[in-house]
Length: 325
Image (cartoon, rainbow, N blue to C red; front, side, top):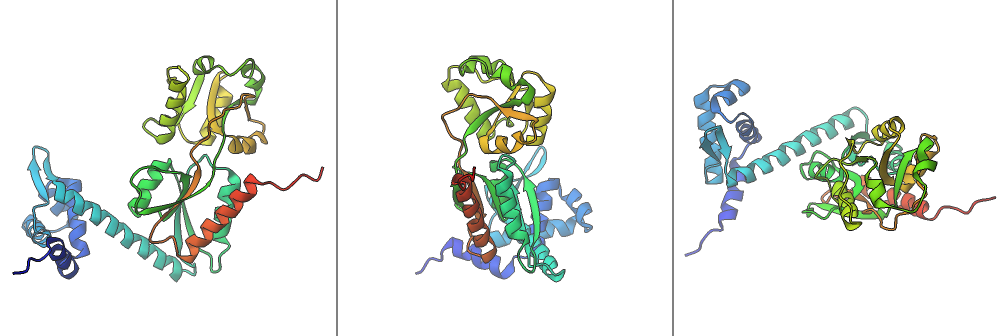
């Protein structure tokens, strides 16, 4: 007697019976937590919703929700199916947008995320590579921390990102390290001379008004580790942000404001004269600037060309041409 693989049975049921509208129903139930509210949202009767839920649970061979004092709550199986539903409907939306872009004369649609702490030259190289293609691509640009961008790539909300190396669960994502950045202490230009006096003293630095990344982000944890390693309690920041523009504003408004930024980013901003690096050099490096991409997209010509352009730009940044002077 042969025993059929349970996973194969579920897969067969999904391939032959599962419909996208049923996935949409499950997401609505997770969102509303009550079948009567789902019925109102979807414009059909509650008995029809109950029947539809029973049918989709038969496809997966198990209950997907359990009742709680706050309404319906996904169980372990339900959470797995909801994750699949979110990815599937996100892929559907992305595909429809790509087709609409092609129909409007574009070569397709690329959704790219960036961290704000990469130099303009690298971002310009990425956008120039995407926009110079013929016919041109439609480009969607989103900003965030690396962990936010990774989550959005996993959820199929982004195709790729320019962020930092990521050590979490990223089997669905390829990572191409580009180069390492040197961290740099940065203040308002008018405060540079005063705050640069003396040797590097983390205890004195910790007493200043810090601008730090948001809590529970990889970079915030890294900065906290630096203070703790130096034997200093991490400071309570006056602002938590990854926005370089916001940092510039606060640095210029507060006499003792200070932040940590990559030196290549500071060098670009220093040209404008608003902020300046302290004279102290920091010996540790930041996690590498990295190109992250959905694994199933990485070999497509658009993304392969983008990764090559970023590698060429990063190499040029590390090895600038000799000065003519």
